Every structure is written in structure tokens, then in C-alpha cells.
Amino acid sequence: MADAPNAKDESLAHLIACPHCDALYAVGDVEKGERAACLRCHGSLLSRRKDAGLMIVALSLAAVILLVSALFLPFMEISRLGFSNGATILDTAWAFAGGPMFALSLAVVALIAGLPLLRLCLTLYTIAPLVFDFRALPGARGAFRLSQSLKPWSMVEIFVIGCAVSLVKLGDLARVEIGVAFWMFVIVVIFVVIQDLIMDAWSVWRALER
Image (cartoon, rainbow, N blue to C red; front, top):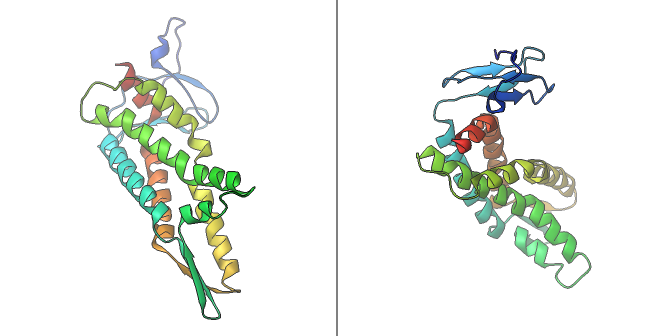
């Protein structure tokens, strides 16, 4: 458990607010494998997992490779009455080039691929040097702040769920074959969820300040 601050001159560098109930605590050094919890709501304040930084770097790098590859590989193929048609994510976006829907297609691609890819790259830029005991790169704090603010806008998981629902409905009208890109998106979602679970933003900020 974390200890509530009882001194008015407590350094702000050692204060942390509970993300669930906003209770304020003074947190000391948390050893690897330990977890600090809120006394009011018992929510997790911070936790240090062994080799968490290395896992975050590995997951981010793997997710970047999968996400970029998924844009160019077949996403699905639809067959009916002897006719079939397959497409990639980029093919779908460019299919509306020159029309009024092109801007919407670009916005969709940006939300499902562009922003998640940017967030993963910002995470790598921030954490990779710290994991390998190098000095933080220039602008690392701004990059990490931006990556955290982009989290609600990274909608790759919404895209996967929406596609799964659409594929079920299309199955009644035509024969649908799921491409390798769809499964890559599923793996990316899993990697991003695991990364967010093991990442301790407070510890990252402390490391950047040092």
C-alpha cells in the first residue's frame, strides 16, 4: 500500500494521484515485483514488473512490424456466383480516390493504423533508450506525453471488432475468406493491450526526469 502524504512540504516529484478516485499519495521506491495500491479504492497506483521495459520494447517493435505489413497484405476476399474480389486496407482507401468519400477513407486509415503506429513509435522512442541504459533522447518527455494522449484515439481494437461483426453479416450473402492481415490486426490488439497493462507511466516519468 502507498502512504498518504502528511507533510505540506512533500516534494511534488514523489506525489501520485490515483487514476480511479484522484486520491493523492506520496510514493517511495517500489521494488521490482511490488505493487502500490490506493487505500481508498484499492486501484493500482503503480507496479514494477521484472523486465517490463524490455517486454514493452519487444511488443511495440513487433506490433509496428505487424501493423505496417497488414496494410499491404490481403485483408479479406469475397466470393459469390463464381466471382471473387480481394482487397487490402490501402486498396479500400484508394478505391474512393477522387470521390467525396476519399477524405473519410483516409480518416479511417489514420485512426485504425496511422495513430496506433505513431503511438507505438513514440513509445519506442521514449522507452528504448531507458531500457538499454542510455540517456533519454531529445524531446522524449513530449513524445511520451503525446503517446499517452493518443491512447483514446487509437482505435485498432474497435476496427477489429467492427470487422468481425461485418464478416458475420456478410457470411449470409457471400463466401468470405479472412486474410492474413485481419489476424495481424488481432495480434496487434493483443500486443497493445498487454503493453498498456505492464506499462507504469509514473515510473517512466521518473526515469525521464532522472
